[in-house]
Amino acid sequence: MTSCDEKKALPPADFSLGGASPHDIARIKEQILEGNQKRRKIVIGVTCGVLAVLIVLGILLGVYLNHDTMKSRHLKFRDGNKLYWETVETDEDEGTDTFYTEGGNGAAAVMFDHKKELKAYKFSGRDICYIVPEEKGEDEKVKEVAKELQNIQEGSTEDVKNGGRRKMALDESRPETPELSEAMGLFCGDLEPRWATIELPDNDDASSDIVLIAPGTFGRTVWSIADTSGEQKSRVKRGWWGRRRRRRSFSGSVYGGYNGGWYVGVSISWSW
Image (cartoon, helix red, strand yellow):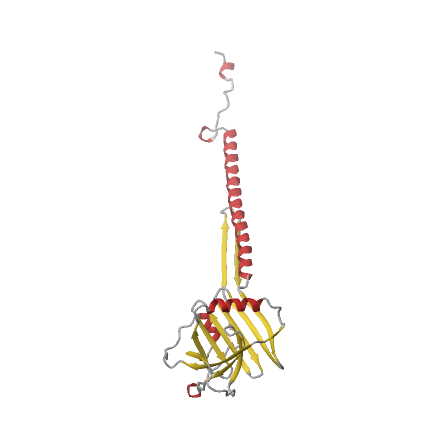
């Protein structure tokens, strides 16, 4: 063997890590990068889908919350030369129909709570909220009358019917405090709720008469309230015309993130 043969260059040594070639390493890095991008796209896609669903739900919920279940009508009733202002409120959620009447001789109101099968009366100048059980089948008649009035043009003037005379008096046989729903409690306000009876008047004394336009003998019903001066208390009367509604709210939030630095958050809230 000649010295030239001994000095012939040896083939290049492969110094790649783990016996892998630079081409394999580059391919592995590319696969890792592609995997990260794919995972990021999946996370982004899923989060965008969740956000889209939340937006749609938010819109639907907003439409639902903006649907006011309280219907109201303001009307006028004429009785000869006398004029009465009437407000009718129907709350579908609470299951109540309420009638407010104001005239030259005072103001009166009645709420029919169809769920509790009770009706509550209040009269200006009186510190009592008179509670009377609904009569059998009365709820359907009241709903029908309320619906009829709700369909009348707002602010219109109607001719009143004569509904006769009635007398309101405390029911001494039921001294216990009536159990009221939240809606009726708001209607009564700070007036004292007491069980009461409705009777035909035994005299023509009109000194304490107040007109109430409401179902039953629907039309202009003259109410005389039995003297309860011995029962009177000094009470603040809040919310006489109408009742305060509960303030309800809804809030929701969703957050998504990715450890590579991408982040999104959404918060939704409503009050009504």
